[in-house]
Image: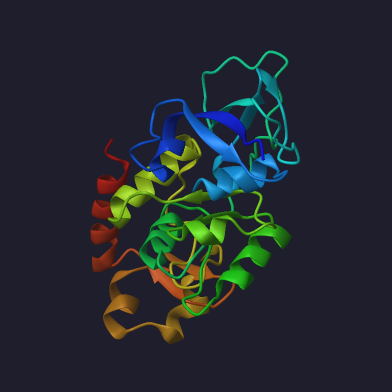
Length: 247
């Protein structure tokens, strides 16, 4: 039986998912049957949400394209400077900055909330629920699990490369161009709810004695009713913000 082959070249950060023998170079891939380009790319190790442009024989195609013998593919990640011309991205650029994070990214979720971003997180959520939330609530799925990103219903997602939460935060800020959108101390670190300013009299009965004596500016989470003020912990949070944003 005659064997069919296709030729691939992956660019930029997509090489993070490839073995060393395929990184940063053109390679030959044996085509078995009549697979789609989406299935083939994921079989090679690259989750589909990481891919933004596919060229088949110099023409842009979507994930439904079926491989043919001799096809030559160039596969691109998110980019900011490549001229598109008549080329079509696989999905429109998303201006929303809502996230859902897997169970391994609890600190990143808290840091994103600290920076002012909507970050859905729960430490008992399974992969199926995370994928459904990403799809139904139009949230960008952040994960350390490559397999989770390969779920069919996930449209917008990103595999977080870094291990350290501060580095993870910088990575997400860079990937989604969020540096200018940072608005710290706007969200509850516990539940992700929005904070609103409240009068002293509204919350005084709930405050420790010394807090009632020394502070007059308070914020209330609209979801869980947690009260916030600029106490001793505030300087520590400010130092953390400085670490994240010092780039």
